[in-house]
Length: 152
Image (cartoon, rainbow, N blue to C red; front, side, top):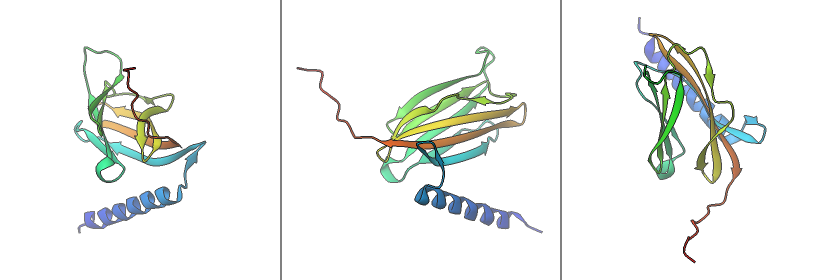
């Protein structure tokens, strides 16, 4: 008996319905923010988790990496920019982590001329991987501002 193909179809249909329903109808609002995506991922063998937001040439990519480093001590989060459309979020020492995340929205930039923010929560199990919940929000519309010259 083979169950996996049916499960994959069910998951695909659910994800497609959920994504199109929420985005097109903006059904989920948190105060003044529209929920763009809500993602829960259980990592596999500490492999990076890649999240793509947006469409086409202006889509943004966020790569989340779980790292264990005994020299660092407490858990921490580091951000690095790979290029104009890609950023890496390094989550250090979140294994065996009871539960936690950020306390205020984190501003990431803009997407489709709106401010882009996110929240995250991590639940870690030693030897069993981490679960991360990511919520991406769109804020107010922003104007594209040309960089001002510093020369008089």
